[in-house]
Length: 410
Ligand SMILES: Cc1cc2nc3c(=O)[nH]c(=O)nc-3n(C[C@H](O)[C@H](O)[C@H](O)COP(=O)(O)OP(=O)(O)OC[C@H]3O[C@@H](n4cnc5c(N)ncnc54)[C@H](O)[C@@H]3O)c2cc1C
Image (cartoon, rainbow, N blue to C red):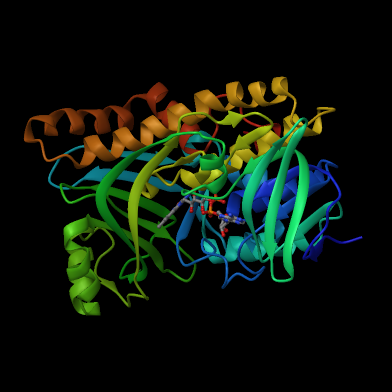
């Protein structure tokens, strides 16, 4: 039996996942693979062009993430479109230090892979179709929640009208502005970076050599990710007040800005693709769990994209939750949820602090900090144990990782 896309049912279910974005879909697949029956509710129609986050952003996937996606059978549908990252180069405009990490030095063939989110979305949809214990409601929107003695009653709006679903565990995988989080009364702390991020593909004059670049400056970070056919995924951050002017630039003007911000390491940049702007904020839920409820992915924490951590972190949320639920008699039991929160805490806090600290420290216009920043980069570059730690964290091995990501650990 294959997974069903239906528009209604009333029978109680064990796990109800709200949100079929990159993280919710991964969780649904992981639960199915572990033998747990679940229901997935997604507001968008099940097509890559309808799903908000299955778009043109280029995702840098950590090695642990690819291990996890392979373990749940998604990677075979995506691998052909992915590009290996064999080197990472971090620097700051106008300062002398730089940090470099090479896969070979750490005994692996790749530190991670880049993949357009659209391709990952297509792979997830493909794999979702093969799930046998999963019920999919799409397009369908969660409209209200009512606490029950042993779970939640969800009211869901579908094309055919309203349905109710009773669930023993409610999972909020519904993104940055999570409705589930608000209904659970969980506060979120916000930080507005006052930056806008432009994503576009460019073709550099020189071969990228499977190198991912991150470059910081007073105006914000810029990243260049290796893609197939010698192209690169450009991520250019500008102060929010300049966003309209940058959006209005013609291709030549945009390329000139990208070149000025990134420099000439890969020679002249050319052939810019369509530009996509994103406003950037950090949103952190104060708690990960509520009564018979849990938050995963962007609903739990939304981080600055430049550190390339959002989905990587969210997948570790999903795989950890699937692992704990698969081993439990009652998926919503308080001890299961408390174990989830405890296991996710070190990875979540460490990754969020790293992402936020990196962007703030590296982009603040403080000349007094320049030598320190350069020394820190040089220290990472030269000092073995620091390099190992950075490389291990960069590959997504942090805290107590879910077993699925460890399969190919070197
Ligand atoms: C420009 C950019 C670049 C990025 N680059 C990277 C990167 O290199 N590496 C990385 O790891 N991460 C990256 N990220 C972060 C990554 O894209 C996100 O962390 C990830 O998409 C979060 O997935 P999610 O499923 O938690 O949330 P979302 O993708 O936002 O999905 C939430 C889903 O919930 C659905 N939904 C919402 N409300 C309801 C409701 N009431 N009922 C039913 N459904 C509902 C929505 O339709 C949506 O499909 C980047 C982000 C941006 C913006």
